[in-house]
Image 1: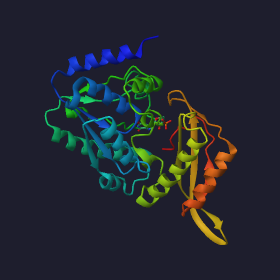
Image 2 (image 1 turned 90 degrees about the vertical axis):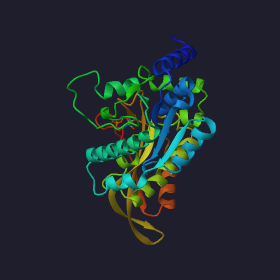
Image 3 (image 1 turned 90 degrees about the horizontal axis):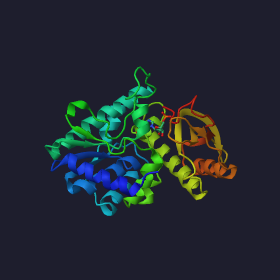
Image 4 (image 1 turned 60 degrees about the vertical axis):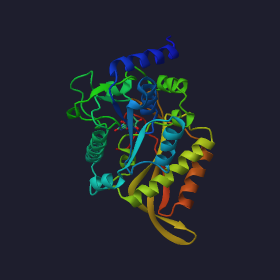
Length: 318
Ligand code: XMP
């Protein structure tokens, strides 16, 4: 067993030697990996680390505000905020195919990030929070593996940018990254967060992504996560979220007929996201979540539970 404190010291030394007096740029997502990578690198190069946080318009309820406040006020990161919501929504207009959605978001992300990187000027290094399982899943080691999903990771940026990569977390698993984050003083509000895909809510809003559907999904997801947390399940599961289905069905509220959307609840247990089991949640919790979602969010009148493991399903629905 190796000592995490020693690991941190060693990495800081290495990053500092590698970068010299150069500039490093990084995209922050609000997630565990990019945040730990940034704070580690900040220890080595200080404000010569230039972070960019892009609001894709595909984030969860109040997510941009909350995350940015931690970055600026608690972690003192040198971070630029870019609200590119409109650009992403435009790129997604009319797109329904899951792979096309992923590509549209990935492409837009690169455009936005390149623009921001140019403003920093003469940065030579790109920091990425790549983990060991990412290296494997993206097939960097194996040849000929078929693409299951086009991964868009924050920081998964193009080779044409001519930046040299720094990937300090590439030998680690998620639990190790969380432990290191804790040593680095990163608040639990960040370290406890579930993984969230680069394409964000676009792959949880099935069919065409519209502002109206995103709003329904955001509100439903916030209810699920809040109740999950209150019931003590949030940190027991690997990941939990809502998916908005492109299906409407008939319901009744009071004595009024409704014709509303369906939300699926997804909660899984996993070690690294490569395989997963659906999580068995408490009946009362599920009941409360379903009631609250239907009562509080006009436009949704049905809640279903996803009881599929990976394989044969994937964790995300798209
Ligand atoms: P799937 O849906 O493939 O997801 O079973 C496995 C894990 O990866 C996350 N995920 C992504 N993470 N960029 C990411 O950074 C992506 O494009 C992406 N797609 C899926 C997913 O949330 C789960 O934790």
